[in-house]
Each structure stands twice: as C-alpha cells, then as structure tokens.
Image 1 (cartoon, rainbow, N blue to C red):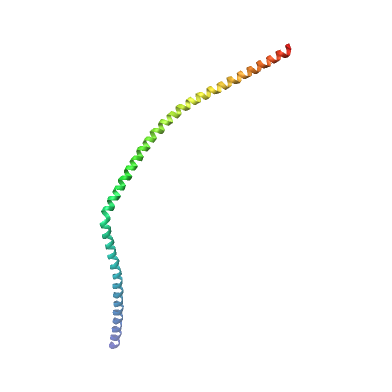
Image 2 (cartoon, rainbow, N blue to C red):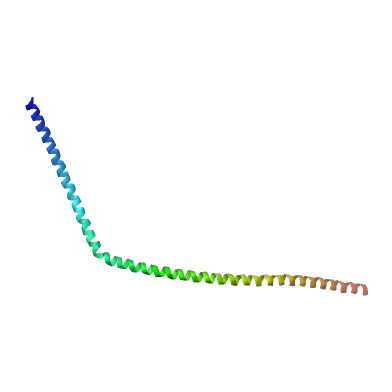
Amino acid sequence: MIAANAAFVTLLLGFVAVVALLGALLARRRLGHVAAGAQELAAAADRLAATLPQTLARVRTQMKDAHSSAQRGLRLLARFDERAAASRSALVARRGELDAMHARLRKAKSNVESIKAGLRMLIRAIELRRTILG
C-alpha cells in the first residue's frame, strides 16, 4: 500500500512541478513584457525630463502674458464702469431737459390749437358779417 501511495504522491508531485514550471514560464513571459513597457516608460520619462524646463519656461511666459492681459482687461472694465456712470448721469440730466421741452411743446401745441380755434371763430364772424351786410 505504501508503494501505491508513493507512486501516487510522486505522480502528484510531478504534476505540481509541471504546473509550477508552466506558471513560472508564463510569469517570466509576462514579466518580459512588463519590463519592455517599463523600459519604454523610462525612455519617455527621460525625453520628457529633457524638454520639461523649456516647456515650463514657455508655460510660465504664457501665464505672465495671460496675467497681463487679464490686468489690462480689468483696467478697461473699470474705465468702462466710470464712463458708463458718467454717461448715465449725462443721460439723466438730458432726460430732464427733454421732459421740460416736451412739456413746453405740449403747452405750445395747446396754445396753437387755441389760436386756430380763435382764428376759425374770427373767420366765421367775418363770413357772418359779409352775409348779413351783404
């Protein structure tokens, strides 16, 4: 019985050894791909490290330009606000003048209407006198 068990254990250990060998071969193959990818990544990092200072300097310059443009825009907006306030006060003053003119025009129109009515009455009176005096 020990001989039968020994053959079974040997067979089982042989199978485990073959599976372990296959696992090791697959792991080695996978690690070879990972190592190649890691080498490519390291080469890309080296290329990036070589160009990084120039890129950072260019970005810094662009940020300074953007900052100065933003400052200029803010100054323009502040001046626009001042102009808008001045224009608004001028328009309010002009509106008051226009309202006064409008009131005078209404009064002048009513005066013209009164004069026209008076003239119509005068023309009727003259016509009436002609018809009466003949």
